Length: 434
Image 1 (cartoon, rainbow, N blue to C red):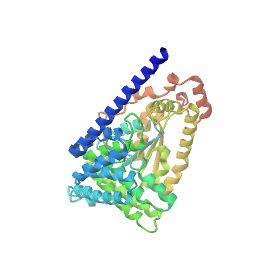
Image 2: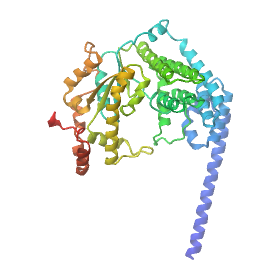
Image 3: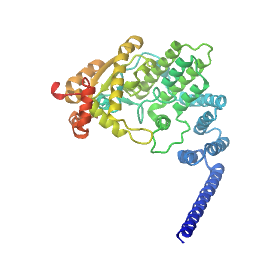
Image 4: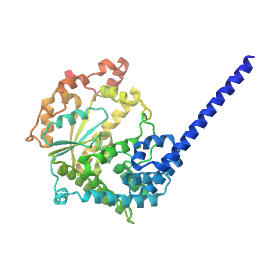
């Protein structure tokens, strides 16, 4: 009897599940039917990520295509189509559409530019610029917060770090492809446009970490920011220049670097000119462990902030652990820390020579515990001693940040404390020794 009852229960469950799946399929069918027929571009964009996650690529491509065909002049929907065409390797079609859309965006912005825009942007740098580089929870944000206290300072980029160099579709990836393959393809050019416009096709849930999704999110913030109008204009101009370079029979790395440096220099000046900024704070455009990518930048002043590996391990690991970002063991982090610090030490002399960058390395602990002395050192390095500083505007309070020094004593197991001290003795901070 028990066997018969179990069979009946299994059949009932199977029937219920089949009915539920049928309802889901029917709901999806009618939903897509409605979307295909009635959705406006605005409505599609509002539910874009949600629909993307709940449909197959073919269904989604068909849906966006139909709305694009109904509204061919909608700029954002058209850029979404570039991303979808890229997935299907319809690269020639995608690139031609990107060229048209780039011209449209540039024309719209160009019509709003002031008469003296070009003379200012193409001239000498309009003010001090600092590249702030950290090692991921190494405390570079504290220096950024301090520098916000200077009158006329502007933190860049809107809504997040600057990813145009370091993330997928960015300049570092293009440079890597060029040095490896000796030429660029349409794929790199399309991806750069998708990076600028935030239109990569990404089927990732909201709680999962995905670099392409991060690019999409941050690029949308930049595009919608009133402060970034001319910055976007200059990135699009740089895109056109790199596209033209990619069509040359002989593609020399030196010429590529010259194009990129000039484009980024113009972008820096455009930000300062448009926003009337006196001090530009560029946040993590090139992180410390990606320092070789600084060859892409015009001469800059870098502040590189390092931290006691024990404290950094605690805070960095707490930020990991979400889907797509696995945590490190203590042994893994020690090896990673050592590798990154050595890379920076190796590359700073080379970058000083080949790119004319200048560097100031400071420790988070020194900045917190000896703030006045280290702040004077920063000001002198940036040549901003004469700029007006306001305690009301700065976001950094060394007395509050004191809790982030030697926090490993509370949160790190004794055996791991010993492992760090034995493995990285030169990098572990000891307050009494200072």
